[in-house]
Image (tube, rainbow, N blue to C red; front, side, top):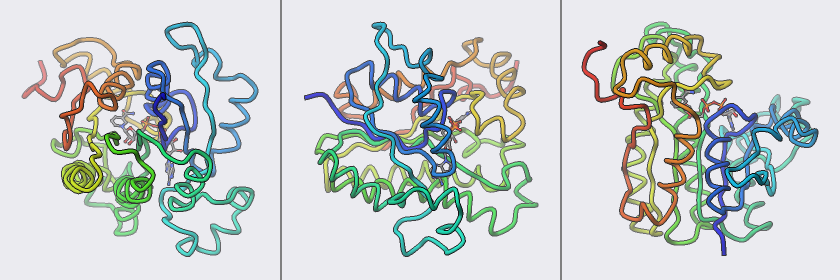
Length: 286
Ligand code: NAD
């Protein structure tokens, strides 16, 4: 049987989640997607109307099939955690079962088990503010949406993951080096995500034989990255200074994710894998 993957954090065809879905689909995996509730309508409508058909083309010429799209808000673990104003918000009221626990339960009802879990989501409401100007709420919101969301997803999906399964998130080098402009506690959130990758690799490995890794990706002009405001500068900087002087394509990250999810990577866990044209290895820009 082919493997089944759940990818959290796809709402268009520009981000890393989409590229990872394509690489996994090209390798024969069945694709399930978790889409942020406020973005669900437009994503499903665009899919249905064929807006993504060009970018659904796989290397063999066939189109990637998404078996099911689940509404998801990874900031809420279960229904009891959802505040009234969110429950009654009209963008949320039209969907149901979108807390992490409920999504895992629904996937279990629908398909029984999965083999691959991908976390490709982040959110920091104050990302454009320097850390010194970030509020407590902004900082905690960044960590909640971008780091704890992964702990929660893994915790709720592990019971339905087959042993030998693989789990993956996306991180950024601002966790370990100073990247001015990546603010709002997002650098802190990525540091937490990387540290958690090691601890979760231990716990999920010992208890369930599941591998946990994170890809430290170079800059990509995704929707989320455009919202930060400095993505073009980061792409230019990388092309100018990295060992490999080319623009990074989302597919290169997708292919690394497919490798990490596959048995070819059966001894790799607890790792931060750089897919960034080597920029992380530079000490100075030249
Ligand atoms: P993206 O916009 O394609 O993906 C981010 C997704 O997160 C969006 O689909 C958004 O709807 C979703 N999301 C936000 N809050 C959510 C929530 N509470 N619940 C569920 N979904 C939620 O952008 P991307 O850049 O491809 O981001 C994917 C991952 O890659 C993120 O972890 C990001 O930090 C990481 N990353 C991006 C870059 C880059 O330059 N783009 C570099 C390194 C790492």
